[in-house]
Image 1 (cartoon, one colour):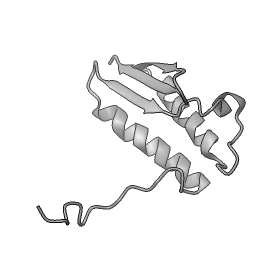
Image 2 (cartoon, helix red, strand yellow):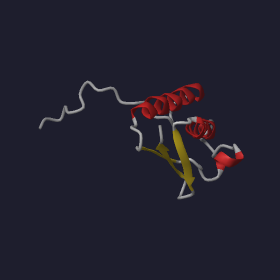
Image 3 (cartoon, helix red, strand yellow):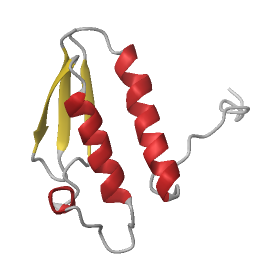
Image 4 (tube, one colour):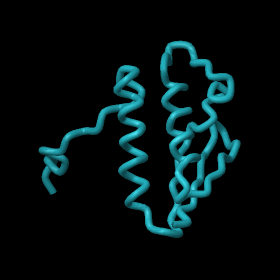
Length: 102
């Protein structure tokens, strides 16, 4: 195999390095794209849903301005999608599981 396996592919932007508005757009786009591709009975899994408690208090970690807001938005999008039944497990920084029911 040659070393050009990923040549020509666009590397996705990092949510953590994107600016505030771009973060929200990226988070929304990831869930909106992914949710339609998951079959009924499939799972959406996502980590960092508690973010060391910052999601509940709506505060940011030092040096991570805006990250809490986009995590809260992602959690909201999943919770409001009636095709999914979700739960956040308080493991480390939080893991969301959402079962697609319709």
